[in-house]
Amino acid sequence: MEPAFVVFAGIAILVIVTIFMGVKIVPQGHQWTLERLGRYVRVLQPGLNLVTPFIDRVGRKLSVMETVLDIPSQEVITKDNATVTTDGVVFYQVLDAAKAAYEVQDLHLALVNLSMTNIRSVIGSMDLDEALSNRDQINRRLLAVIDQATTPWGVKVTRIELRNIQPPENLLDAMAKQMTAERSKRAEVLTAEGDKQAAILRAEGEKQAAILGAEGRREAAFRDAEARERLAAAEATATQLVSEAIAGGNVAAINYFVAQKYVEAFGKFAASPSQKLVMIPMETTGVLGSLAGIAEIAKDAIAAQSTARPSSAVPKTS
Image (cartoon, rainbow, N blue to C red; front, side, top):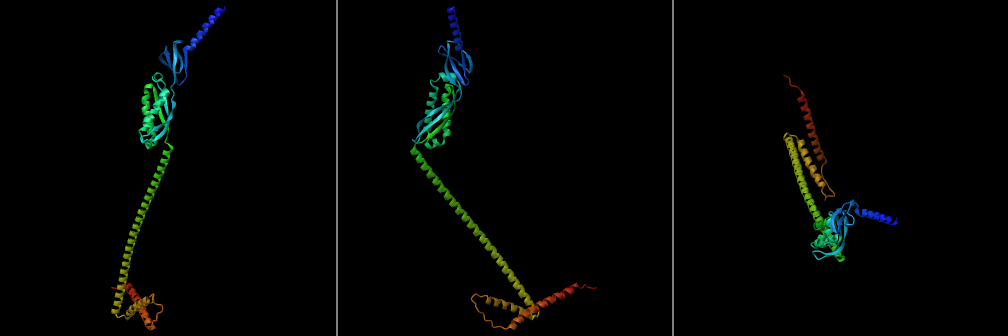
Protein backbone atom coordinates (compact mmCIF):
# COMPACT_ATOMS: atom_id res chain seq x y z
CA MET A 1 0.00 0.00 0.00
CA GLU A 2 2.69 2.44 0.78
CA PRO A 3 4.52 2.30 -2.58
CA ALA A 4 1.23 2.63 -4.45
CA PHE A 5 0.22 5.58 -2.30
CA VAL A 6 3.53 7.28 -2.96
CA VAL A 7 3.14 6.79 -6.69
CA PHE A 8 -0.43 8.07 -6.61
CA ALA A 9 0.59 11.14 -4.59
CA GLY A 10 3.45 11.83 -6.98
CA ILE A 11 1.15 11.61 -9.98
CA ALA A 12 -1.37 13.94 -8.31
CA ILE A 13 1.30 16.48 -7.51
CA LEU A 14 2.58 16.30 -11.08
CA VAL A 15 -0.92 16.86 -12.46
CA ILE A 16 -1.47 19.84 -10.20
CA VAL A 17 1.87 21.37 -11.14
CA THR A 18 1.15 20.76 -14.83
CA ILE A 19 -2.21 22.49 -14.50
CA PHE A 20 -0.68 25.49 -12.76
CA MET A 21 2.07 25.68 -15.37
CA GLY A 22 -0.45 25.52 -18.20
CA VAL A 23 -2.58 28.42 -16.88
CA LYS A 24 -1.38 32.03 -16.93
CA ILE A 25 -3.44 34.91 -15.53
CA VAL A 26 -2.41 38.31 -16.93
CA PRO A 27 -3.57 41.39 -14.95
CA GLN A 28 -5.43 44.24 -16.64
CA GLY A 29 -3.20 46.85 -18.30
CA HIS A 30 -0.38 44.36 -18.96
CA GLN A 31 0.71 42.07 -21.75
CA TRP A 32 3.13 39.15 -21.51
CA THR A 33 5.15 37.59 -24.29
CA LEU A 34 5.12 33.80 -24.60
CA GLU A 35 8.20 31.89 -25.64
CA ARG A 36 8.27 28.28 -26.72
CA LEU A 37 11.65 26.62 -26.37
CA GLY A 38 13.22 30.11 -26.32
CA ARG A 39 11.38 31.43 -29.39
CA TYR A 40 8.65 34.09 -29.34
CA VAL A 41 5.22 32.63 -30.05
CA ARG A 42 2.51 35.11 -29.11
CA VAL A 43 1.35 37.77 -26.64
CA LEU A 44 -0.76 36.84 -23.65
CA GLN A 45 -3.67 39.24 -23.22
CA PRO A 46 -5.19 40.29 -19.85
CA GLY A 47 -7.19 37.46 -18.27
CA LEU A 48 -6.88 33.67 -18.29
CA ASN A 49 -4.50 32.18 -20.87
CA LEU A 50 -3.65 28.49 -21.50
CA VAL A 51 -0.11 27.52 -22.44
CA THR A 52 1.76 24.30 -22.99
CA PRO A 53 3.38 23.22 -19.74
CA PHE A 54 7.13 22.63 -19.58
CA ILE A 55 7.54 23.91 -23.16
CA ASP A 56 6.08 27.45 -23.05
CA ARG A 57 7.27 30.10 -20.66
CA VAL A 58 6.66 33.82 -20.10
CA GLY A 59 9.33 35.98 -21.74
CA ARG A 60 8.70 39.67 -20.90
CA LYS A 61 6.04 41.27 -18.76
CA LEU A 62 5.14 44.71 -20.14
CA SER A 63 2.71 47.42 -19.06
CA VAL A 64 0.54 48.86 -21.86
CA MET A 65 -0.67 51.74 -19.70
CA GLU A 66 0.71 55.25 -20.23
CA THR A 67 3.94 55.48 -18.30
CA VAL A 68 5.88 58.48 -17.01
CA LEU A 69 9.64 58.41 -17.43
CA ASP A 70 11.90 60.95 -15.71
CA ILE A 71 14.69 62.50 -17.76
CA PRO A 72 17.65 63.31 -15.49
CA SER A 73 19.11 66.82 -15.49
CA GLN A 74 21.98 67.59 -17.81
CA GLU A 75 23.99 70.62 -18.90
CA VAL A 76 23.31 71.91 -22.41
CA ILE A 77 25.24 74.54 -24.36
CA THR A 78 23.05 76.88 -26.40
CA LYS A 79 23.84 78.40 -29.78
CA ASP A 80 25.28 81.55 -28.15
CA ASN A 81 27.54 79.46 -25.86
CA ALA A 82 25.44 79.79 -22.71
CA THR A 83 25.27 76.78 -20.41
CA VAL A 84 21.87 75.79 -19.02
CA THR A 85 20.71 72.85 -16.92
CA THR A 86 17.62 71.02 -18.18
CA ASP A 87 15.49 68.06 -17.17
CA GLY A 88 12.08 66.75 -18.16
CA VAL A 89 9.55 63.95 -18.31
CA VAL A 90 8.42 61.63 -21.11
CA PHE A 91 4.95 60.09 -21.34
CA TYR A 92 4.82 56.94 -23.47
CA GLN A 93 2.64 53.91 -24.04
CA VAL A 94 3.50 50.43 -25.37
CA LEU A 95 1.33 49.61 -28.39
CA ASP A 96 3.10 46.46 -29.54
CA ALA A 97 4.43 44.33 -26.71
CA ALA A 98 6.42 42.01 -29.00
CA LYS A 99 8.36 44.89 -30.59
CA ALA A 100 8.91 46.57 -27.23
CA ALA A 101 10.28 43.29 -25.84
CA TYR A 102 12.48 42.14 -28.71
CA GLU A 103 13.35 45.21 -30.84
CA VAL A 104 15.22 47.06 -28.09
CA GLN A 105 17.40 45.73 -25.30
CA ASP A 106 16.26 48.05 -22.47
CA LEU A 107 13.26 50.19 -23.32
CA HIS A 108 13.55 52.60 -20.39
CA LEU A 109 17.26 53.17 -20.89
CA ALA A 110 16.79 53.64 -24.61
CA LEU A 111 14.04 56.26 -24.09
CA VAL A 112 16.13 58.16 -21.51
CA ASN A 113 19.23 58.33 -23.71
CA LEU A 114 17.23 59.18 -26.81
CA SER A 115 15.43 62.03 -24.98
CA MET A 116 18.63 63.47 -23.49
CA THR A 117 20.39 63.41 -26.87
CA ASN A 118 17.54 65.18 -28.64
CA ILE A 119 17.20 67.77 -25.86
CA ARG A 120 20.85 68.68 -26.39
CA SER A 121 20.33 68.86 -30.15
CA VAL A 122 17.20 71.04 -30.04
CA ILE A 123 18.34 73.49 -27.34
CA GLY A 124 21.83 73.64 -28.86
CA SER A 125 20.35 75.03 -32.07
CA MET A 126 18.72 77.96 -30.22
CA ASP A 127 19.93 81.11 -28.52
CA LEU A 128 19.43 81.39 -24.78
CA ASP A 129 16.59 83.90 -25.03
CA GLU A 130 14.87 81.78 -27.66
CA ALA A 131 15.22 78.63 -25.56
CA LEU A 132 13.81 80.35 -22.46
CA SER A 133 10.83 81.86 -24.27
CA ASN A 134 9.92 79.02 -26.68
CA ARG A 135 9.55 76.03 -24.39
CA ASP A 136 6.38 74.88 -26.16
CA GLN A 137 8.20 74.88 -29.47
CA ILE A 138 11.03 72.79 -27.95
CA ASN A 139 8.50 70.29 -26.60
CA ARG A 140 6.82 69.95 -30.00
CA ARG A 141 10.13 69.39 -31.80
CA LEU A 142 11.26 66.81 -29.25
CA LEU A 143 7.93 64.98 -29.45
CA ALA A 144 8.07 64.78 -33.27
CA VAL A 145 11.65 63.45 -33.34
CA ILE A 146 11.40 60.96 -30.43
CA ASP A 147 8.01 59.60 -31.45
CA GLN A 148 9.30 58.89 -34.93
CA ALA A 149 12.43 57.22 -33.54
CA THR A 150 10.47 54.96 -31.16
CA THR A 151 7.89 53.76 -33.69
CA PRO A 152 9.94 50.63 -34.61
CA TRP A 153 9.97 49.72 -30.93
CA GLY A 154 6.19 49.52 -30.77
CA VAL A 155 6.05 52.56 -28.47
CA LYS A 156 3.94 55.69 -28.80
CA VAL A 157 5.39 58.80 -27.14
CA THR A 158 2.41 60.99 -26.23
CA ARG A 159 4.06 63.97 -24.52
CA ILE A 160 7.44 65.42 -23.66
CA GLU A 161 7.69 68.24 -21.15
CA LEU A 162 10.78 70.17 -20.11
CA ARG A 163 10.42 70.78 -16.40
CA ASN A 164 13.26 73.24 -15.99
CA ILE A 165 15.70 75.30 -18.04
CA GLN A 166 18.05 76.84 -15.49
CA PRO A 167 20.85 79.23 -16.52
CA PRO A 168 23.86 79.70 -14.18
CA GLU A 169 23.75 82.29 -11.36
CA ASN A 170 26.02 84.84 -13.05
CA LEU A 171 23.90 84.69 -16.16
CA LEU A 172 20.75 85.17 -14.09
CA ASP A 173 22.26 88.28 -12.50
CA ALA A 174 23.15 89.67 -15.94
CA MET A 175 19.62 88.94 -17.19
CA ALA A 176 18.13 90.70 -14.15
CA LYS A 177 20.27 93.79 -14.81
CA GLN A 178 19.31 93.72 -18.47
CA MET A 179 15.63 93.46 -17.60
CA THR A 180 15.93 96.37 -15.15
CA ALA A 181 17.66 98.51 -17.76
CA GLU A 182 15.03 97.59 -20.34
CA ARG A 183 12.19 98.49 -18.01
CA SER A 184 13.86 101.82 -17.11
CA LYS A 185 14.27 102.57 -20.80
CA ARG A 186 10.63 101.71 -21.43
CA ALA A 187 9.55 103.98 -18.55
CA GLU A 188 11.62 106.87 -19.92
CA VAL A 189 10.16 106.36 -23.39
CA LEU A 190 6.63 106.34 -21.98
CA THR A 191 7.37 109.49 -19.96
CA ALA A 192 8.73 111.24 -23.06
CA GLU A 193 5.67 110.17 -25.03
CA GLY A 194 3.43 111.52 -22.28
CA ASP A 195 5.28 114.86 -22.23
CA LYS A 196 5.00 115.03 -26.02
CA GLN A 197 1.29 114.36 -25.97
CA ALA A 198 0.80 116.90 -23.15
CA ALA A 199 2.72 119.55 -25.12
CA ILE A 200 0.65 118.82 -28.22
CA LEU A 201 -2.58 119.06 -26.25
CA ARG A 202 -1.48 122.33 -24.62
CA ALA A 203 -0.57 123.78 -28.02
CA GLU A 204 -3.93 122.67 -29.41
CA GLY A 205 -5.68 124.26 -26.44
CA GLU A 206 -3.80 127.53 -26.87
CA LYS A 207 -4.58 127.46 -30.58
CA GLN A 208 -8.28 126.93 -29.92
CA ALA A 209 -8.24 129.66 -27.26
CA ALA A 210 -6.58 132.09 -29.70
CA ILE A 211 -9.11 131.22 -32.40
CA LEU A 212 -12.03 131.66 -30.04
CA GLY A 213 -10.55 134.92 -28.72
CA ALA A 214 -10.14 136.28 -32.25
CA GLU A 215 -13.70 135.25 -33.12
CA GLY A 216 -14.94 136.94 -29.94
CA ARG A 217 -13.07 140.15 -30.70
CA ARG A 218 -14.39 140.12 -34.26
CA GLU A 219 -17.94 139.63 -33.01
CA ALA A 220 -17.46 142.40 -30.45
CA ALA A 221 -16.10 144.69 -33.17
CA PHE A 222 -19.13 143.94 -35.34
CA ARG A 223 -21.46 144.64 -32.43
CA ASP A 224 -19.61 147.90 -31.56
CA ALA A 225 -19.78 149.03 -35.17
CA GLU A 226 -23.47 148.18 -35.30
CA ALA A 227 -24.08 150.09 -32.03
CA ARG A 228 -22.17 153.14 -33.33
CA GLU A 229 -24.11 152.94 -36.56
CA ARG A 230 -27.42 152.87 -34.72
CA LEU A 231 -26.29 155.71 -32.44
CA ALA A 232 -25.29 157.77 -35.45
CA ALA A 233 -28.63 157.02 -37.09
CA ALA A 234 -30.46 158.05 -33.92
CA GLU A 235 -28.44 161.28 -33.71
CA ALA A 236 -29.12 161.96 -37.38
CA THR A 237 -32.84 161.40 -36.84
CA ALA A 238 -32.84 163.66 -33.79
CA THR A 239 -30.96 166.37 -35.68
CA GLN A 240 -33.40 166.09 -38.58
CA LEU A 241 -36.39 166.41 -36.24
CA VAL A 242 -34.85 169.44 -34.52
CA SER A 243 -34.08 170.97 -37.91
CA GLU A 244 -37.67 170.47 -39.06
CA ALA A 245 -38.92 172.00 -35.81
CA ILE A 246 -36.64 175.03 -36.26
CA ALA A 247 -37.78 175.37 -39.87
CA GLY A 248 -41.35 175.36 -38.63
CA GLY A 249 -40.53 178.30 -36.36
CA ASN A 250 -40.42 176.42 -33.09
CA VAL A 251 -37.85 178.30 -30.96
CA ALA A 252 -38.14 175.73 -28.14
CA ALA A 253 -36.49 173.15 -30.39
CA ILE A 254 -33.39 175.34 -30.59
CA ASN A 255 -33.31 175.62 -26.84
CA TYR A 256 -33.66 171.81 -26.51
CA PHE A 257 -30.80 171.17 -28.88
CA VAL A 258 -28.53 173.70 -27.19
CA ALA A 259 -29.44 172.39 -23.70
CA GLN A 260 -28.68 168.82 -24.74
CA LYS A 261 -25.22 169.63 -26.05
CA TYR A 262 -24.57 171.85 -23.02
CA VAL A 263 -25.46 169.06 -20.58
CA GLU A 264 -23.30 166.54 -22.48
CA ALA A 265 -20.29 168.86 -22.47
CA PHE A 266 -20.74 169.64 -18.80
CA GLY A 267 -20.95 165.89 -17.98
CA LYS A 268 -17.69 165.18 -19.83
CA PHE A 269 -15.99 168.10 -18.09
CA ALA A 270 -17.17 166.94 -14.66
CA ALA A 271 -16.17 163.31 -15.31
CA SER A 272 -12.57 164.22 -16.07
CA PRO A 273 -10.24 162.30 -13.64
CA SER A 274 -7.89 165.31 -13.30
CA GLN A 275 -10.61 167.59 -11.97
CA LYS A 276 -11.01 167.81 -8.21
CA LEU A 277 -12.89 171.16 -7.98
CA VAL A 278 -15.10 172.68 -10.66
CA MET A 279 -16.08 176.45 -10.65
CA ILE A 280 -19.05 177.01 -12.94
CA PRO A 281 -20.14 180.64 -13.51
CA MET A 282 -23.47 180.25 -15.22
CA GLU A 283 -26.95 181.67 -15.11
CA THR A 284 -29.59 179.57 -13.61
CA THR A 285 -32.28 181.14 -15.71
CA GLY A 286 -30.56 180.00 -18.90
CA VAL A 287 -30.66 176.40 -17.81
CA LEU A 288 -34.27 176.79 -16.72
CA GLY A 289 -35.12 178.34 -20.03
CA SER A 290 -33.60 175.40 -21.84
CA LEU A 291 -35.59 172.99 -19.68
CA ALA A 292 -38.68 175.02 -20.35
CA GLY A 293 -37.99 174.68 -24.06
CA ILE A 294 -37.86 170.92 -23.66
CA ALA A 295 -41.18 170.95 -21.82
CA GLU A 296 -42.78 173.08 -24.58
CA ILE A 297 -41.69 170.59 -27.22
CA ALA A 298 -43.21 167.75 -25.22
CA LYS A 299 -46.49 169.64 -24.78
CA ASP A 300 -46.75 170.47 -28.47
CA ALA A 301 -46.16 166.82 -29.40
CA ILE A 302 -48.85 165.60 -26.98
CA ALA A 303 -51.33 168.23 -28.21
CA ALA A 304 -50.71 167.30 -31.84
CA GLN A 305 -51.38 163.63 -31.10
CA SER A 306 -54.60 164.52 -29.20
CA THR A 307 -55.87 166.66 -32.09
CA ALA A 308 -55.11 164.01 -34.69
CA ARG A 309 -57.03 161.20 -32.97
CA PRO A 310 -60.59 162.84 -32.78
CA SER A 311 -60.35 164.07 -36.32
CA SER A 312 -59.50 160.64 -37.61
CA ALA A 313 -62.35 159.13 -35.60
CA VAL A 314 -65.17 161.44 -37.12
CA PRO A 315 -66.90 159.64 -40.02
CA LYS A 316 -67.35 161.41 -43.33
CA THR A 317 -70.90 162.48 -44.34
CA SER A 318 -72.02 162.58 -47.92
